[in-house]
Length: 513
Image 1 (cartoon, one colour):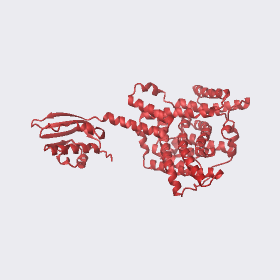
Image 2: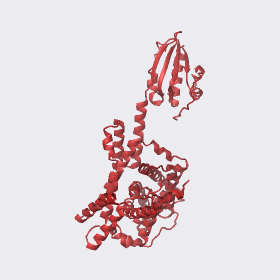
Image 3: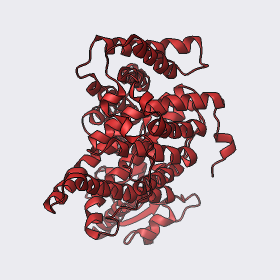
Image 4: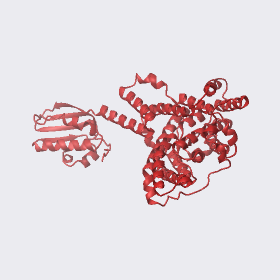
């Protein structure tokens, strides 16, 4: 449960409000850019930033975390937009009706993805983010930092010298001002100072209004509308694959952002609560004509570094965004794009895990490989693919390193040969386990002692069962010591030969089928 009183305000209400205002302005070009990527109207992305941002600010798993339309989700929606467009054109639909029809499929996707995300949180599956190893987390952060920086390059088309000067001036302000005072967020100072300078001096540079004239959306607020396709089985089947990917990408990016903010703040957020909040937000987006989204690591870090640690900062950011779009579009239109590019580049620099360079030569080669691989995949492919690849590689490396079980042998006074095993017995080391035996030359009486070993999964139990059968088929007697009762219950051939010891273990065996 949320302790709302404790999390509404961070270090101070002033910091939360000012930081939220900076984030509100920074959300505008991102929401517009991601809408263009998804091939929909800018208002669809702006609504997403408002609705999803407000809901996750209120009930999310981490106070101060910012959510909205993101590039990772927008890229998934490109394929859906193309498929929906081709289908609608084949039905003779064109013009405004075509654009409206595409939105219906996108909003349906948002609802289905939201249901999946709520299910993930309700079944407490958010905890599996802990399976992401540190090298994969650092690789994700580094790759995302590069992606954030590269995503700003599109704004530099036909940029003149003035734009580059403003970018450098903004970055210098973001770097130097916090060294003297933290009373006012550096990003807000940069926005006010350079916007006034450009307007007062009549400088010719690219403005937010040049990306998309927001005046046409003045006074517009989201309105409730259930997608026309929600009861269409064919439509549901078409969007389902995209909805699953959107849900997983959204959960992974949100929970990894939560982990990054946990490190910054030194406090721990709730992964399952964040999944439920993201799902609730996306369902609401789908019912108010917005695209799905997830947590935004860039804006979240802007918020945290500007002092916005409470829920109030996210509330101010989302409501401030909507107020800007609905009432102050003329002012929003004259903000130089260069300022926002400079802010995002500073975010990129702050996001990058620079210490990973010094650590990479000292960490194990496998960890270094995971870090570099996840970084590259995040840049060239997809966040979800990158993180899943990192987890799989790390898991395989871990299994390989621990796939070692050894046996010491000795003879007892009556000539019985004892195999004393040491190490874990699981699917990765069954072959090594079988190679320890010398069935042809072993004496008539054999003892397998697992006092210093642990049977980890069903593959290990079946390996013991199989070797027991081989010895029995060879006409030899065998006894097995120090196995858990669960191991004995699973065995078919060997359980009647297990000897009871006072210190038999009580561990459980993991089933892998």
